[in-house]
Each structure stands twice: as structure tokens, then as C-alpha cells.
Length: 59
Image (cartoon, rainbow, N blue to C red; front, side, top):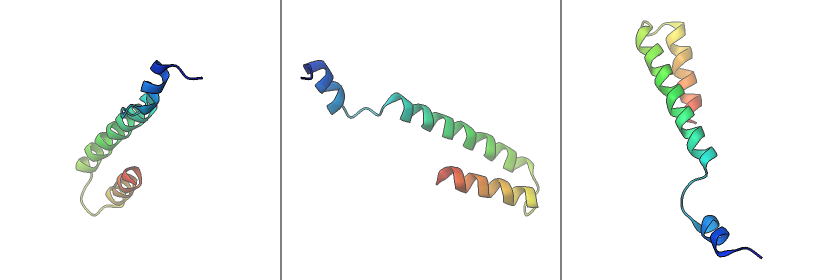
């Protein structure tokens, strides 16, 4: 039988640490992609590739 402390943990609205870590990692990779995109010439193959990576990362 679960204790009261475990029940509170299960019913809490806080996201698990792994989800928060994944979001932070995703956010950090997006920042790096945007920074790289700003450095590339508009319309170049590399900018198109980076744009596609951004779309894939966002989902």
C-alpha cells in the first residue's frame, strides 16, 4: 500500500525531472541552431538544412 507521501508525489502537477531536462536540452539546441542560422547567408543550402533541423526539433 502506498504511503501518503508517495500519493502526493503521484498526484502532483510538477513534471518529472527527466521531462524538464529534455525541455532544457531542446531549448539549448534550438538556441545553437538559431545562432548558426543567423551566421549563414539567406537562401543557402546550409540555411535550408538548419531551418529543417529547427522544424524537426520543435516537432
